Picture: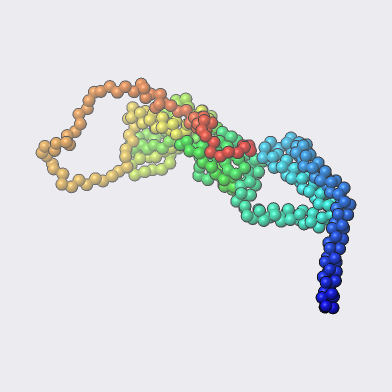
Length: 349
C-alpha cells in the first residue's frame, strides 16, 4: 500500500508539470505573436505595396533605356529585372520585420547562388538568351533581310529570344539558335543591294581575243538588268588546252533582279552573238577510239539518223519565263508572311 500511494502522486505531479510547461510555452508564443502582430502586418503591407508598384516603377525607370536603345528585348529584360528586384525588396522587408533576419539574409544570398546553379544547368538556353540580347543591341540585320549564316541562305522571318527563323529560297523554314548566329560569320546580302555576278566562257585560239572581249562587254551592257555603275568587266582567267577562258563580271540590283537569272540570260545572249560573229567556242580536246566499227554497210534499224523536220515551235508563251530576271526575294518574303509561324514568340528586332 505505501508503494501504491507514492506512485500515484508522482504520476499526477508529472502530468501537472507537463501541462504547466506547455501552457507556459503557449502563453509565451501568444504574447510574442501579439507583440509581433503589428510588425507582421506592417511587413505584409510593405510586401503588397512593393508587389503592386513593381510594374509601374519598372516602366518608369526604364524610360531612359527605352529612349537610348531601340531593342525591344533589352527593354523587356530591364523591366522584368527591375520588377523582380522590387518584389525581392518587399520580401526582404517582410522577413526582417517578422524577426527572421538571418533567414532574410539567407534568402538574398541564395538568390545569387540559385542563379549561378541555374546558369550552369541551362547553359545553352542562357547562351542563346545572351546572344539574343547582343543581336538585339547590335542589329546586324533586320526583318526581311537576306542573310547567309552557318551555310544557310534565306530571308529573315523572325528573331525570338531563342532562335532566328530563316525562310530559304526553297520555301523551307530554318531555325538557327541565336548563339550559332552570333558566333558565326553573317553575310547580309540586303545591306548593299548591288551584287556582282559572273559568267565564264571560252573561245578558240583562232579568234581575236580583244574583239571577243569587246563583243561580250557590249552584249552585257545591252541587258537592262546589268548596272552601268559599277561597269561590267571582261577578264581573261586562264589558257586551256583548246580554249582561252575569260570571265564576264557584271553588277545587278539584287532587290530587283536575280543574279542567277541575269547570268542565264547573258550566257544565252553570248552564245547567240558569238555564233553570229563566227567566234568559235570549241570543247576541250579529247581523243576518241572506236572499236569494231563497220566501215560500210546498212545502218541497223533504230539507229537511222533523225530527219530534220521544219516544225514551228510556239515560244510566245515561254518568252516571259525565259526573259524573267526579277528577284525571287519578294516572292519568298510573301511566302514567309503567308506561312504558319513555326515558333510562337515575340520579335526582338
